[in-house]
Length: 83
Image 1 (cartoon, one colour):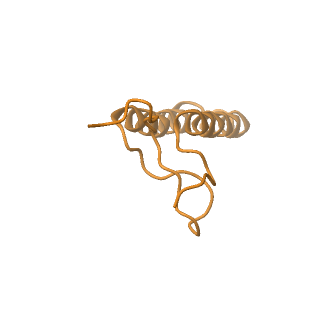
Image 2: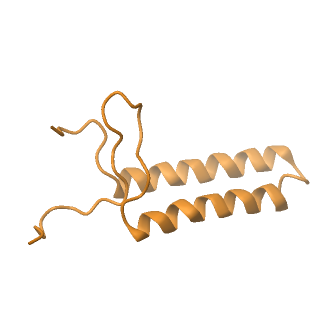
């Protein structure tokens, strides 16, 4: 039986020695965020990039920041005490 007090992470932390960050999503919610990021990135490349490179760079930075914030919020803590 699953422990209801254990948090359900959308993204796993990378194992030690594999860099900082998170791995591929563990849940359907994580996959929606992950795929949504790439869809919005592609939409920006098609709609924004032809008109203004600087706006596109801001778009990419904003999307990446949002993805990291979601990973921090819903992902497994980085550098936690995993053994």
